[in-house]
Length: 424
Ligand code: EPU
Image (cartoon, rainbow, N blue to C red; front, top):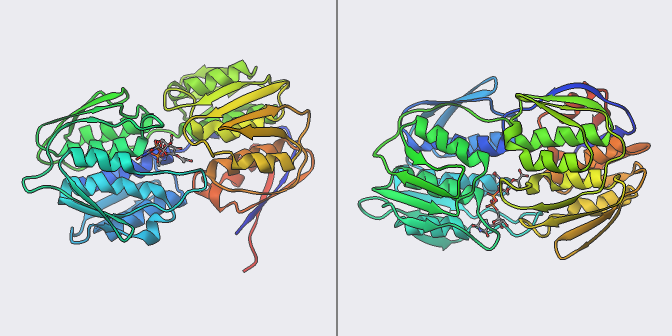
């Protein structure tokens, strides 16, 4: 398990380009299961999770060939419809093969995803949506066994809301299954995230008839078959936001390129409330060097509101703000693992009932800390870069799941960060 050694307090400068969105790439890749024709997906981030998704597709009879940031896929055979635990235990997004498999092969056996450090993450909405389309679902030995009825899935009106609002990957699964069902499906309380829209656009380019993606009501008129895909995934709005916080927390001037500011409005709004000077220029965000940020009040909610995947990074910034910030988690009430580590660096944070109160301090201090999950690791790297002295961040394999060669890209901006490999 590698460690980052970070020497904080450096001013950074320059440009940093955003890669393709992990959370778009993972579901988009699964659309190749829905066609017998070859597909090509471009602009993929070279991340462990994306490689895991490709391995899952390989076990499902898809041949793949990488070419730079593109992957070419071809159906070799459709004998196996089981997505195994060995792969799904490392990455929950493997569950995105459920809807595509059911649509194309009439059956799917997918391991229930394992536990998750950011809190309970059930898949009841996925199953409820697929059942509404006529699928028979059994849970056996830790696997979801889904079978389409004789004659295939049929369109239905489905309310896909849960206690915590909409679900991104449940919307994906139901939308994919409905794309090839008989008749019309209406999904109410669909997730509106740009990553859902990216999948819908990709499916439409393959011949599907989906409208309303990006709104809470998605209408899908089923088609008999889909053609191949040639698709480029959207830029990663969470990576872009992480880089904006990087500029703000190190009080540096940075330009974040290849991003979609229109996907980041709630985040940009919060940054501006904190006094961060951001200029939007087309696909670029220019962040001017800022003074000490103001405190913020943030509530995470489904898109288009403030994303839970940016909560940890903004908490790191709030640790250094002038005044008391309040951050409320409305997606994953337990997603505050980073707070304890930030406190080891001198932050003042108290947490109760899914709410963190952060009393800003003037400085953080380098310390030996531990990454617990992907976004927590990003927040701790940011804190380390702003802190006085040396930080040793352990268990950084988490950050490799979502940020490609992050230390090399940060070094190009002037950051002092190095990877210390674990002795073999
Ligand atoms: N939920 C249910 N039942 C379900 C599904 C979800 O109650 O069947 C609840 C969840 O427990 C949560 C809320 O609904 O409280 C939203 O979860 P959602 O299903 O939208 O999350 P997801 O689709 O599993 C995606 C991202 C996450 C991101 C969430 C929320 C992918 C591959 N993952 O997960 O990304 O946090 O949406 O925006 O798209 C990350 O990148 O670090 C990450 C965790």
